[in-house]
Structures are given as C-alpha cells and as structure tokens.
Amino acid sequence: VAKDMNFTDEEIATLAVFMSTLEEPKGWGEFGKESLLGLPDYFNFSTVGEVPMDRMRIGAMLDSGGDNTLLSPAQIESEQGQQFARSLVLSNNAKKFGIAREIERMKTQPFMMNGVFNFGFILLT
Image (cartoon, one colour):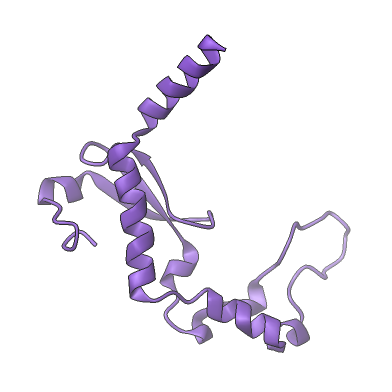
C-alpha cells in the first residue's frame, strides 16, 4: 500500500500498525505525524483453513453459566458456516483497499479536526 500510494519513508515511519478487535480498519491520529492503524484479525487469513471457526462465538456471551458459547460442529460444517468462513478471507486488493481508505481518512480528517467540528456544532446548537 505504501508503494502504491507513493508514501515517503518519513511518512511510513510515523505510522504504527497493530491488530485490533474491530470489524474494519480504524485509524487514529494524523497521517504524516504520529498515527495508529488498527487492522482486524481477519486481515491475517489467507485461506479458509486458517479461519478458527472452532473458537468463534457469534453474538453476545451472556452470563448463563453454560458452556454452550462456541459454534457447534454442525454449525461450522453447514453451508452458512462455510460461507461465513469464506467471507473472512479477503483478497490482497480488498486488504489494500481497506488500509488505503483508512490512511486517506487519517490524511483528510485527523482526529483533532473531528473533535473541533463536533464541539463547534454542539456549542452552536
């Protein structure tokens, strides 16, 4: 992505990347200064076999006292389960798009400007 978007070494050095628990890439800070980019864990999956379906839990985990919080083998092997696993494996272009989109947001909408706009809107209303 850095090569495709023609970033300088200095710009790349200001970006810290980490794996997050969010459902899509999320950036904090202003690109070119100090910024963070969180990537969802499914950006690591290259094949359906890498998707840990046996450890996945869909929905909220309630304090019911039961151990029935993981997907059952029948759910994993179902057509819907397999379709879900396939949906978590993105192409390289899809991953590049997600990363590039979030970096572009950090360039054009740094977090401080969003805070100033929100504060100004609240103050004026």
